Length: 78
View 1: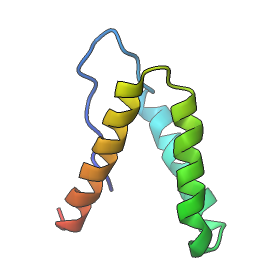
View 2: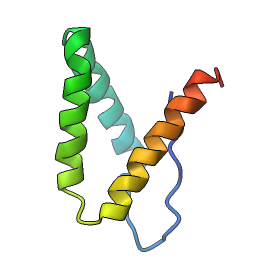
View 3: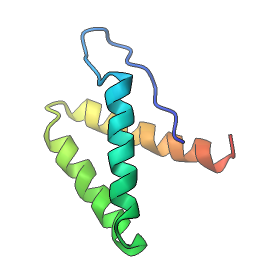
View 4: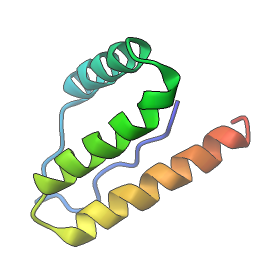
């Protein structure tokens, strides 16, 4: 599972952990319901849809970098 960093700016809001768990579950169910070859396209479309809802390019780019770092963490087997 990918590690998600904590918010550093107290003025920014984030989903409560329980909601994040619900998102994770829905994402897992959705990915399991589609062929593996379509999953990458789905994830790219999801990322763009979510990025469209965030009015701050720096937050979007930070999220991309956070996700990339999370995949590196997973590759190390930790």
